[in-house]
Image (cartoon, rainbow, N blue to C red; front, side):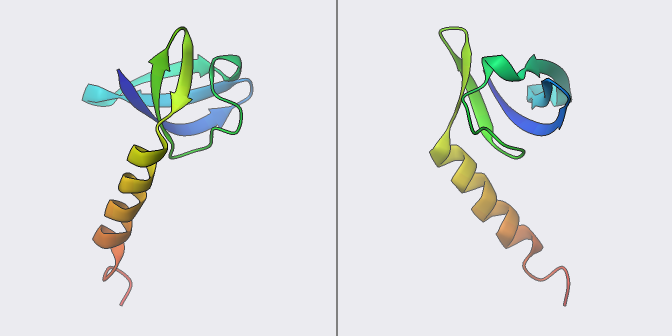
Length: 70
């Protein structure tokens, strides 16, 4: 199951999963250094950052917003 870190609130990350389902995940269950916008997935009880998918998402967002502010 993959999710995207939406924001941090105290000791929790608010993560959006498929179907726009939001869930609070304790920071202690995240890979150190995880940040807003990172795509994460669960492996052995810890949420790890999917670096490739996170980068693909950033590129896609940049393309979508490229001409927005002209």
